Figure (spheres, rainbow, N blue to C red):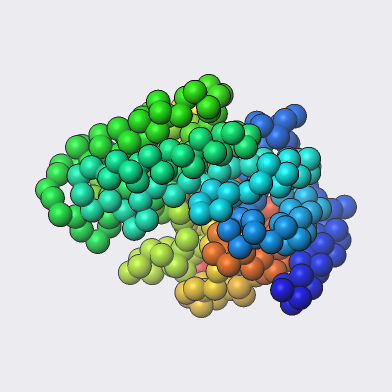
Length: 320
């Protein structure tokens, strides 16, 4: 763990250097209310289990000016003390609850699995998480064992979401925010076999988190090569298609995959995604790195804070 801690200490130094130049940021008055514009990180089980790692990473986030953390609830949720610690730093806490790893392959989910998911949701509400983020709330992308129309697929997934809310309402307050992760391609297309669609989802949920990782737009050269435009366009389309008042927050790519086509450094690749979110009609971004290795992300965030809107000339050069 020593190298990681060294990196995190460097984060603190880098972040502290940028505070004086941080653009004024509007935050809500309570950590139980979502910030007007979300800027944060994904927190995995490894970080949850390592209390020192947790404390240091959240301090780095606060010092840098970030305001939100999306935290795993399975298989090992954070302790009440960890949640209180993060809230004391002014961090808005979002509980990430995985539903169907890889997506559903049958028409209806296994009852015991649904019960386990709802147990995690209940635990999140008991811990005081103001927002429940449903991940993998979809059918499998690689094919299913049945035939079903698009509309029936949407109805089925929405039925599961409604059931989650109904079965946990005795624990989750009425003001709980319900959100979901959606595939990055969903805002760009009319229908999808995975059972996700912006319009019906926004009728049942308070917010959507499209996973707009540029590297995952397989075969779409422009999307892969244009991290700024991919994030901006994805959020703008989500807002345009969603019910008025629905929040749209981008998952941005904080991992080094297919960065080359952008002609940007890894750090700048992350930075321009943040700028794309800021320039969009959306409501923020969360950086995903599965291993919670955030050195490049914090360097990118420092640069983003100094330049929230990209240099148009540099951007056009990179896109040519």
